[in-house]
Image 1 (cartoon, rainbow over the protein chains, first blue to last red):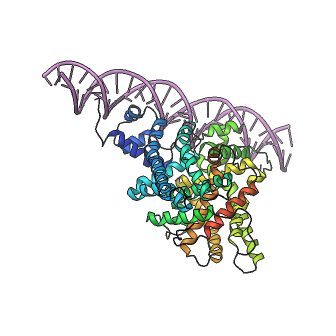
Image 2: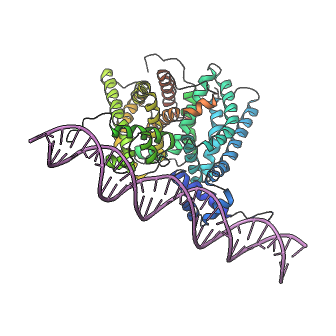
Image 3: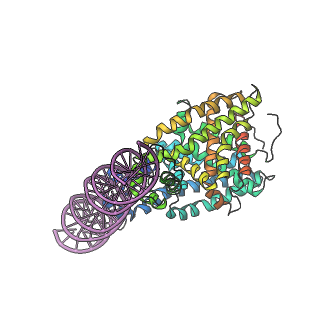
Length: 221
Length: 221
DNA sequence: GCTTAATTCATACGTTTGTATGAATCAACC
DNA sequence: GGTTGATTCATACAAACGTATGAATTAAGC
């Protein structure tokens, strides 16, 4: 078959099952048999469509990362065009960074939550085969958001901005990837239900953090 | 032997090797053979001293978590005693939370960095056998810091405080567990060298974030 | 309707895994 | 100095893993 136009494919079924299971149990702890079992596919299908497990992992990650990062850059572009050359507000920059993944969660809650957990695992994992992906997907994104943020906070050094973007990313990742911890410690009173509300919480925390005065503050609260 | 008073034990060697390898490659991806190999111990020693792999993981975690959380609570106690009944500054609360682990890093950089990565993996991993540990170690800590923070920020609701403590934790974990990402994106210009400087950065970001106004801000930067 | 290429499937191979077992070694104590 | 209990060690085992192979099945093109 030269033009395979089947969409509810075995291939997609495997990607979906792998996404869920990798997010739930980790890359190493998820066996190909568990994936093909859930996808109702044959064990050999993984090797046929993805060659090897590592390539399957990369395919799972790329499927979501690529469009998501494109969305983020497009949003940043739009905001910058709207601002007409003036520096963006920190909140706008953070919105361009965090709204696309949160809209994925709103659109498909399960897939979105799985994906954030995958990213978190990706960063923790040292797997050498992941490094190229991280490099290629994050390089431009980091550069663009860094320079936008520098213009928004001109009194900060380049290093300061690197640190604070890093912190903001930590807020986002931990908040969504480990939301079960929040639900546990708040005895169920805090949930990641309405994603607009969560987006606002994250942005307002991070924007305020990014604007923090660098030097030690006075003794009065 | 009724009183085994050997300290440079096989047991400790295994714990050290396991700590390093678990942090570097994850729980599931680290084999007992790799651990005993690095610890120059026999494979059987793991089963002898720790019964099973899961128990070894718990032992590795508990060894650091227990004294660290005790330190945090003691520091909070001290600060509260010094304040003599008045609410603590947000910075002080965060210092009680983050200084102990950062001092572990200062004292023993490798062990400290490993440990933070372990905690991050712990939260990502769903392993049922970890849940009791998380529950027992975090329960009181969360309660204490939550109520201290509520007194420091009386205008916030209890839910707000849960969220912001959660965010602060995300900053801390990501900053230290995934510091390689920061080093990469800053092309080596940001490093987690001086832990006092990092502590200050984290605290000032989080304190400012915790004080953020809950409602949407005006349009002007 | 036969041909051809794409896809599925059952099965097998060689490793590596965690765990179990029992003998060997060691250190302390009476 | 022989006994005892703690620890080490070599080895074995069954299970699970990723991957490979080749036959069966399916569907499209002429």
